[in-house]
Image (cartoon, rainbow, N blue to C red; front, side, top):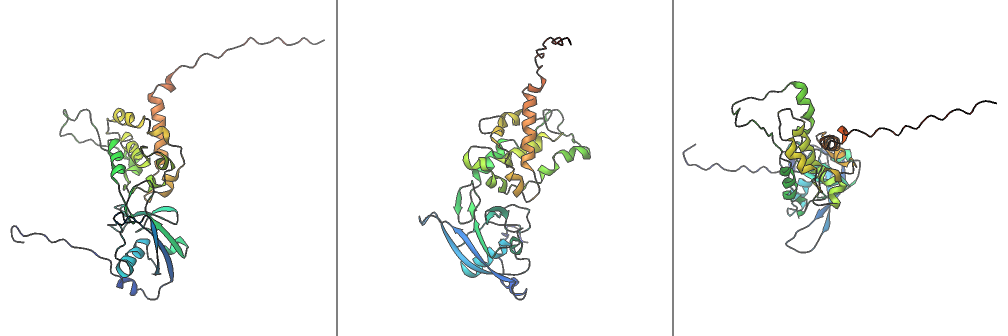
Length: 282
């Protein structure tokens, strides 16, 4: 490549002919898709489409078929198509899921209602605004904090395998926002940190290399922090990577109680009453 030559951007598009090469469709499914365009001022509407479904067709495949063949105005966010990036989170028939991971045939329904995730502002159609979500993520300091960083600049902090297991599950978070959408507390308290941020706080609290416990606990132990979790467990139910935010939150509650010294307080001595004398037998 010559010096100064610009690198062209490769645009990857969905080719509907791929589906045609699969033979006869298994069935046709009705898609009722949430539509919202703030520039029009028409409010929320739903558009209905009939989509041919083949073996292995995902919800994302179907939505891209709609966009390429039926309605180019439909707005969707997606990227990797393999449940790694977390871009295509949405609500299908009332449940949060990744569109690229969810096969239509597996939903066992001839009608799919597709809408954007809850608890996040809708930008357009199925696309939501993640600004507040990531602001809360940053608030819990999601990185390793060391107190000796100036002393041991070149040191490698090693871990034993059993230490990695303590936080490995929570390191699998892809920040898709499904848990945040499913959380009933986030629906009623827009300032609530949310399950994603709190599970990531636990990921670093549980890391043996980290010294940032105090800073994170101060964020969690706040009016819109960890105590507002009602332990509904819906966050863990919808995670596509098997992360258990509900478990992490309960662990953090225990650590906060221990930090407060509640478990270290001595209980008052029991009020021991004198034993009553038995009534003598006659």
